[in-house]
Image (cartoon, rainbow over all chains, first blue to last red; front, side, top):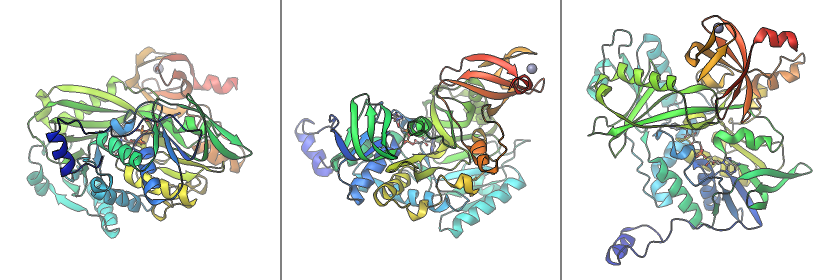
Length: 416
Length: 84
Ligand SMILES: Cc1cc2nc3c(=O)[nH]c(=O)nc-3n(C[C@H](O)[C@H](O)[C@H](O)COP(=O)(O)OP(=O)(O)OC[C@H]3O[C@@H](n4cnc5c(N)ncnc54)[C@H](O)[C@@H]3O)c2cc1C
Ligand SMILES: [Zn+2]
């Protein structure tokens, strides 16, 4: 059923009895033209754009847990397109533009909120770097504003501006950035894809790839073999394991990132702010919880939980920037397993095995990329050619030395 | 997470710096260089990895489980080099 004023009224007068499930739960067919492995944000968005824009036949998304159980439902919901380097800037801007029209496109309220993302700077060198980044963004048609210390004070008056070690010297503001309700993104894409005939198969783990003379012909799963014309991998933190099924190693390590939410509070902050002297970023959800996070734990991990040193580090950063948080109680914390790539940038590419495609390496920033990633991955799967805005996000950039390393830290996944 | 340093005993992980997969060894051939620098097994389960004990400045090879974070054998990296 299409969600509209009419559907609301109809259900209001019929005791809410006319709603149908948001998506079906079909048994897998024996064969699909495209099988997407991983029902996270990227896999589901890929299915939606494939079904909407490309004529590829029958599509299935295979998910080992339930829709929304991976990182798409674990992230801190921040979206932005404030990137410096060619290869990233245009890609993330396409993604942000897709967010801007997403809810109409998928007929689902994802609570896209362009409340702004403000990166604070605390040293002259950091301000210089922000000037450079802001200029690169504006040259690419992305919005960016450099705020001085007084403008930051006027915008977010409640921080500790005169911390002796980390005085706030200014900030780079992207007003079109903001937050999106992450679960709604998973559900909305799942429902939109399902309405276009995509089979979403939950609680079904892909355990192997069937490859015949260099051509992939299907996937082995806990519900049996499923034949496929093309197989597209979108397993986020488990990408290396999926690639290993094709005998490949990736330029990726899996790392755990934690996130935190406080008890519900009255409105305290109406934008997203990142602390530039430690690693801390914060926004407030519509339920009132402060949602915040910091650095990754920093060692290879497939555990969806982290360790205490990072908890302490995040809380210390929070207190340094925003002492008023001292009396706020922490409600919950959790972790998600991410595919940290060797240059901190993602991969959307074909694999050396014929008809096998890879979407991976999204690090801690893949939520904002969800629409763009799905859009470009669908283009690649349908046309066997990278989408023009994603034509640098290729696997061979590591052998060619054409890395996209925003931070300039080199091949150390835990530092990106 | 606590790691046992052979010299200092079991210490809080905060005293250590993670230095990645201890598997890859530097190749002679140029063509193998990109593999060495960038590609990783990234296993789910036991993983041999470098940690620097920042306090005593010893490089260690730690066997650690990436799912449970349990720690297995820990040897100074120089011993591993000598053995291989
Ligand atoms: C704590 C945290 C905070 C974050 N904050 C932000 C943020 O503020 N902004 C931002 O842009 N990004 C953020 N990210 C990153 C972002 O969440 C991820 O990059 C992104 O969600 C990954 O893509 P996905 O949604 O497809 O992943 P997932 O939702 O993890 O989807 C992958 C799916 O593949 C499935 N799968 C894996 N292996 C198999 C198999 N063998 N068979 C079947 N299914 C399989 C998994 O079960 C999973 O559901 C954050 C991440 C974390 C962990
Ligand atoms: Zn020691």
